[in-house]
Amino acid sequence: GAGVSQSPSNKVTEKGKDVELRCDPISGHTALYWYRQSLGQGLEFLIYFQGNSAPDKSGLPSDRFSAERTGGSVSTLTIQRTQQEDSAVYLCASSLGVSGANVLTFGAGSRLTVL
Amino acid sequence: QQPVQSPQAVILREGEDAVINCSSSKALYSVHWYRQKHGEAPVFLMILLKGGEQKGHEKISASFNEKKQQSSLYLTASQLSYSGTYFCGTGYQGAQKLVFGQGTRLTINP
Image (cartoon, rainbow over all chains, first blue to last red):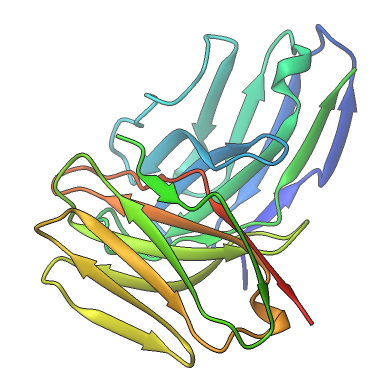
């Protein structure tokens, strides 16, 4: 597609429920990132995928968070047993490659509210 | 490893200048600058690679001081459209992820 597509744009859930957030990167982009942005805060790195390499999961805050990327394209971020502190905007970004010189293109984000 | 941005917030009148700084505790390979308007996704402004270069984009430019491990973003003769939160993202040699600072909120008033 022309840009990075994320769905849903808004998700309201009850504490304890599981949620799935989807990211469809730009066609041809081999690198995919997930970031979390809490209200008024910066961009917190969560996880990074590059091609067929093992993902860099160093930013995942707990084992309730997981992500996968199927076929080197679409990615799903799953949060199990959601907590109120998980409320945030989850941003996905993609880029052409692995180096720090590659420009990231961000999606519009998925706003998660946990009641 | 997260870069430190300063100041955290700036309020200017239209036409004034601003400087936003980004410092790292580790040797930098690249610095990215992004701007995020309220409720929108961050948008790429420019990228600087190690070598002490300076780049310009209309009235927005940036420098990269490899020795000091820092970058500065310069906004001259600011316009209302410059309002938003500015993030620096730092890349490190051999590391694949881009780490962002906490952001600098810039408000431009008429």
